Image 1 (cartoon, helix red, strand yellow):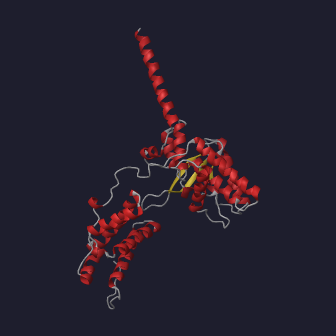
Image 2 (image 1 turned 90 degrees about the vertical axis):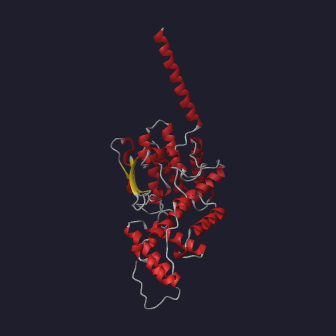
Length: 360
């Protein structure tokens, strides 16, 4: 706990000591090497809890927890993972302030005749009981839908040019971004941070030239760690041409020789810009529900599996630690399952016929 000067009593002791608690907790998390964004998000959750419940940590009880999250679910319809995230942050904060060695227990008893305790337990918080908690409606593109989407994105660039409107360059940049997201199975944050120097040759696939491999430097980080890096091999024959055109656009139009998808100001394109155009095109094409930007990644995994690529190779391409995670992303089509069933049945018939002939 930070040293608290007691020569002058604060005008609002409760608010003052709560802020000191947050400051001490921030220092503890920094010492654990957590990301700044994670720390800020957690602190914001704690502050909202205090504001909504009109109670301070030394006043919290399980009843306060139950009422808060009951209201939160009823009003905001939050996802299970979001609820669990909120409760996890609050539980961690409670652990910090209720640990006697941190000094807050004794101080609160002296100041408020009460003290903080842990009020978040397994029996009153959401538990992580399954690998995937996303919406069951989320899905991959079919190959036909994906081709229609890419064609439409290209057509919009031509339409803007024909009409003499502004925005053709940005539309072209985003069209290339959509194709590269699918080409390498990228998350949107991985995509927007790409630089031209992230591409390199793959000596085992010389036909792709200098775009045989993409080095992803901003992969999804584990808790308390820096972004994960991974190398992704190029697998589609058309991908190098897309990358070449994108680099040409970045250099010729934006004057930026490093970022793959720069804005006119030379900064990374924002996720919200890519999401808005993605959603606009889906709506204009009247594509069935269940698609989001992450569907490019789902589609990459699904289509490779459907086309017979080794599941372990696909797992390594997308940076999943466990095969079960890759399986969650695989949304194989009905046609693929039908072909697989038919192939298995045909093999069974052949083997049965062979056995019968051998017996005769």
